[in-house]
Structures are given as structure tokens and as C-alpha cells.
Image (cartoon, rainbow, N blue to C red):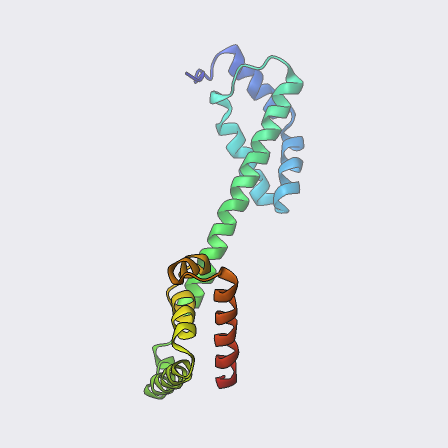
Length: 171
């Protein structure tokens, strides 16, 4: 169980190391954050972790331990910031979606495109169309399709390529 006695000699030595090296800790934290306010917050977080610090007798090792806490806090800060930025981007993209973008004209155009694509696919030989649809639409691996049809995976790959070339003429 961690030592939570803040009145004992261990706590006193940790507080002494902390206060004697406060400017060092703050400068070190500032290197990670590039912000004085965040650096001070980080150093304050270190102070609140002192009661649970392990027993280390060497002042140099104690300082290194405090610096390691700052490194860990900086990593946590950047991870949290990255998640928040990702969330903000996703939220902005969601907010920018407009229900007006899906107009009846767009729906009609998309349906016509699908009908033309279906017609182009129907021009393919049955086996080529089957392989193409299984792989590109249903996501079945080429090896599995080859095994199912009793052909080589290379032939399946060529059939998919032929179907793509044929569809590209449509596009």
C-alpha cells in the first residue's frame, strides 16, 4: 500500500526535492507543452502525486522520478488532445452534413448510375460477373472464390481485372 502519510520523513524529503527543484520541473514541463499555464498545471499534478511516491532515498533519483512523472503526464496530455481533436473533427464533419445534400435529383442520378452499372455488369460473362460481385461487393477473398470454382487464384484475379476494365469504360 502506498505511503499516504504526508507528515513523515519520506513525505518531507519529497516535498523538499519538489520545492527545491520547482523551477527545473516547470522548465522541463514547458518543453513538452510549449505553454506556461499547462506546464504549471502539470507540475502541480506532480505535487499531488507525492503522497503515493515510492520510497527513494537519493535526491537525484527522486528528481528523476519527478521528471518521469512529467514525461508521463505530457504523453497523457498529448494522447488526450489527439482524441479530442479527432472528436472535434468528427463532430464538425457531422455538423457540416446537410440533409439538403440528398435531394431527389441526387437520389435519381444515383439510381440511374446503379442501373447503368448493372447493365454494364450484365454484359460480362456469367462467371466473370459472379467472381467480380463476390469479391468486390461481398468481400469474399479471391482464394476462397478460386477454391469454390475450382480454378486458380490467378484466374480469379484476371477475371476481376477484366471486369474492372469493362466497368471503367462505363465510367
